[in-house]
Length: 376
Ligand code: G3I
Image (cartoon, rainbow, N blue to C red; front, side):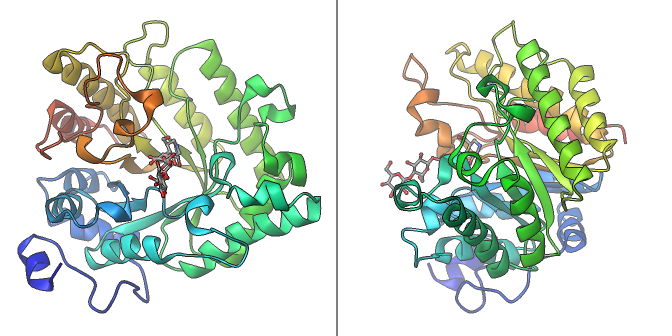
């Protein structure tokens, strides 16, 4: 795509190639967003909140899509490029080229950036458990998968998801930890190790524990929230350099009355995290709508209310510093490609803020209203 096309499309292409020497600070990203008041990022910036989305490098040929992201965002996350099973095809490979493209696009458009994710049970390169069987070997691999990305992007990441989805009380393990290759091989201190290594490799980044399914008013989710808080207290007691908690907010249980979203319950959890001295990032907001009615206006209305309700609570809480949606348009939502989240009626998912033609849906306006009405 030529620079002239990009210039006309409302966003900038990197000056020289894709790698940039330095990133965009939070202050720069918020200032730039304030120049776009009639956008999600602009409205969030009024509350000193970064607002953005995820991007896959293979979708970057869509100029209209990039223009929407540049317009509506003040922070950007490579959706998959910084997962070890994507950048680390073999022991001697660290292919950060795809992530470089996403981060360079963020920098050129004055968006902050965040990294996702250094340590996740679901993104371990397939060759790792097959070839690395010793505890010390696994420890060295974990250090490599934390240190190399952090070094490569040092100074350019507002935050990193250091560990992702590490709590699963159903596994019946101490501290409610999730069973995983890392836990088996390195032991429960693998989480501490990942944070210390990330901080050493990039002291400037805000280090985050990212978790899912902590948003609802139900005993299963309360058990998970309690386990997350217990783990956070242990990490803090061990002087682990953790600075924030990511709450994924894939509102997948919307439409199931047994899992209500109760604002006061969610707000209390935010306060429990903040009371530990930690910041909060709503890190992957969308509404997997497989359980919702097929009727589009009805479904859009439920999606909008779900997003609006959560965002009003989040944007009203002083500890919330960023809100990130997982894709901003239905056209590029992961839900279209994950069979587990496909609808039985075969209709496409409509769980993001803009439709497949990238036109704002009811959910977009609900997000704007929540950001405007948030009290903080
Ligand atoms: O890269 C390969 C490609 O070479 C191959 O041809 C293709 C065949 O299907 O697969 C491609 O890998 C896929 C990858 O996305 C990149 O598209 C994987 O199969 C697919 O499982 C993977 O899905 C991602 C998923 O995480 C697992 O990593 C989704 O795009 C991504 O949106 C989703 O995001 C996660 C967060 O990271 C963590 N929280 C939950 C969230 C939703 O599951």
